[in-house]
Length: 149
Image (tube, rainbow, N blue to C red):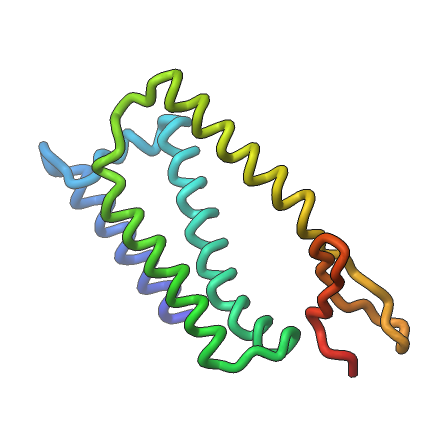
């Protein structure tokens, strides 16, 4: 409770200081604009979802799928590295995407989605104890993702 009170006090002090300056770091009038609030809400949701997924994924991979701690951390490190590299290089993206480029990107995404839909299906199967466990079906082959207990 003490930390929450301190955070509220710091936020109030920040708002007072920013309101008094002629050139504030954050113009508090932006908080009245719906578009700005929507973008803040979207950033909050994406950030919290990413943190939740990154926190949950390693334990799921270890407990449910039987991966080692090293394997699950390697997957997470690969994912994090890819995200960081893409973020660092985002400034190189063209400011305007042409219609041809957009159409090519859509075709590529649709093709990849069709391929995934045709080859991989993850389903829940009842095990002998009445519980459910995930099963991946790749073409005609079935792969057990969770070890039977």
